[in-house]
Image (tube, rainbow over all chains, first blue to last red; front, side, top):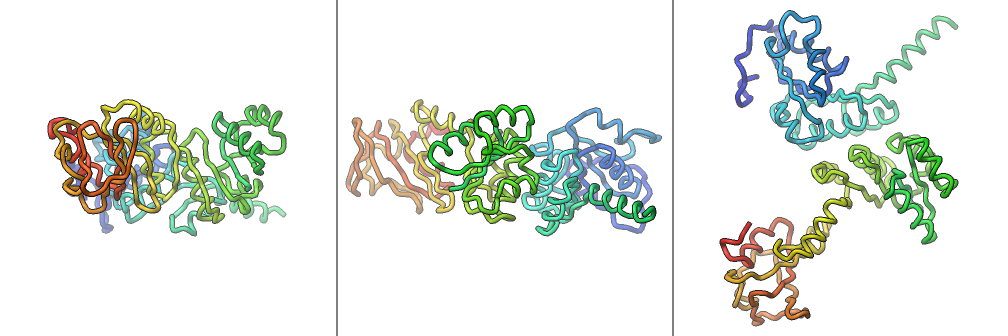
Amino acid sequence: MADRRPGARATPDRPRGSIAAVFVLIVGAGRVGSTVARRMLAAGHDVSVLDDDPLSHERLDAGQATSWEDAGGQFTVGTAIEVEALQEAGIGQADVFIAATHGDNTNLLIAQIAQRGFEVPNVIVRVMDPGRAAWYAEQGLRTVCPTQKAIEMFDEAIKEIV
Amino acid sequence: MYAVVAGGGKVGWNLARELIAKGHEVTLLESDRDRYLTIEQELEHAVQYGDATELWVLERAGIQRADLVIAVTGDDEDNVLICQVAKEKYLCERIIARVNNPRNREWFALLNIQPVVSATDLILRLIEHEVPSYGLVHLLDLRDEQLEIIEVEVLEGAPAAGRTVAEVSLPDGALIISVLRDGGGFVPKGDTQINAGDEVLVVLDPGLEDAITAQFAPPAARR
């Protein structure tokens, strides 16, 4: 769906599976965000990444044969809660919005901006705090809570011991 | 009244102190350990240590019975979210949020967090009031009621200058409620003439400012 974007680049040859390609905006290029970004690009989707640290770009290139941009990815340096940065990163065209910065509060705010302000149809937000992850999930946000997962995995591991 | 104040910076600490002095019950929440210990010397049990964006911290502070939640941390994301859970999860009827960066105002509005207080906007408003060349001053915003009251200076050569109140072509949803002239103010009638140099108070529906300033400034001076 790159052609929906103004000034979209020519999309290089990338494997296209049977799935329909979507435009994904990922905010936060940490370990999680950058890995999800690379996997979605490899799966044939259009992927745009927004991070306030220019150096985070290196995580997108790490271990890859070509640079992130040559592989067809988009990268924007900017602060996630600034509307200009979100627009430059393509939030207006996003089919999927992933909030994966290191801050719960930033993630919860930008996820709601994407959902309510820009009406992005699919919004996924990482929330480390299990209490708020549960409550915001009840309010209609799709939350991913690594802390809750860790607690469950520890529980499982302990059950195998005692 | 029971108030929970999130953020023990200059604003939060002073606010807590003033509210306590007025006889209200207050819990101030501060997430920095050193700052908390400093404040605790004075406020004692009225300050608690913790991150006010965490639900258990709010619950420990008794947010369920709070009459008022005030979020005045230095972080706009925190202030938005504290007010959002106060309002939507704990059904607190009255919230007040501080906006640190005026550019974030629209996010507070998007999540229906109001009223908001922005020091930058307050100072800007004072400047507008003191510096008449700005032309238009917002005196009151009643957001729930969707009404504003503004003060406008009538400039030389403006369409309204020399006309009566009835002749000034204001859009629907706007009404001249007062004329300030020679140091005094009065409520005008339809046949009151408006002169250049007057200031008029107009009550209006939000969004009509441009149509109104067009009547009180000459075409060249419009910004």
